[in-house]
Amino acid sequence: MALVAGSAAQAQKLVVAHRGASGYLPEHTLEAKAMAHAMGAHYIEQDVVMTRDDQLIVLHDITLDRTTDVAERFMGRAREDGKYYAIDFTLDEIRTLQVREAVRNDNGLESVIYKNRFPLDKSRFRINTLAEEIELIQGLNKSTGRDVGIYPEVKSPSFHRREGKDLSSALVAMLKDYGYTSREHKVFLQTFDFNELKIIHDEVMPAAGVDIKLVQLISDSEDFAWMKDDSGMATIAVYADGIGPDKSMIIATDTPVGRVASSDLVDLAHSHGMEVHPYTFRLDPGQVPGYAKDFEELLQLFYVEVGVDGVFTDFPDRAVRFLNSRGI
Ligand code: CA
Image (cartoon, rainbow, N blue to C red; front, top):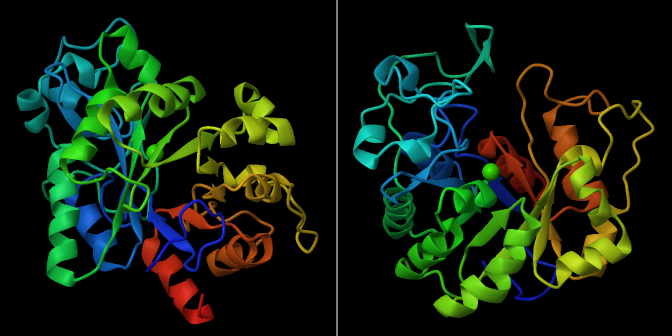
């Protein structure tokens, strides 16, 4: 598949496996990544945080509480807020943890977040390093003859800087080690932090001799409101090749059935030469917005009617099947 560098228009609409095939296996495990690869995802996402001994691991939160048994293994190692921070543990310690389906904790009472997913505390899963995950994906690319890309996110970069760690530089150095150095390579580097995006673009990548595609993530909150108009998009486009907005910023979640209309965010981003990869497409109960009758109609609205360039989904098989069935 050939991507047209520097153009918002591309032949292939993308399926980004959000934290792997996380609808079927615990998020960010190698098992979830292998499944996403086998399901035909075009890109597989990594959230990246740093350990106390400066190792890069794949973990969505800067804390270990939601997806591991850390509270049982390391009593007394929580911070004052009661949470266990990955940055307070060495990689060897983190390797002893069991990864499980995500849970929420309401006043000490734990419950799984998505009830139809992989059963809690069954089988055996671990946190993996970014290096292990890249080697898995590159290994599968070799053995299958496919060319699946990676989509790492710099998580909470200002938190890491306050802790004395330059996450972006370490991440870009590792990408370089594994051959991701130019815009032709199948990698998007993403972050919510606009200041960090500028630092990566202006300082980190030039210092490393790397020039890969960057994506500004956008959440539907006040901090990001300035990004939503033409001048905001123009500012982002100086640094980024794409945006990753919450899908509710494109079609409002409470849109009435039969009256679906989109914001101008996608057109604005395209007019500034950027791709648009909204998040997160899920088919768990209650996760398909009421304006779409099912998951496939949701995909039809975004890929076809609105014209986004890719989607982040926990169910990559369904998005791949949708695109194949439509010949797009
Ligand atoms: Ca992410």
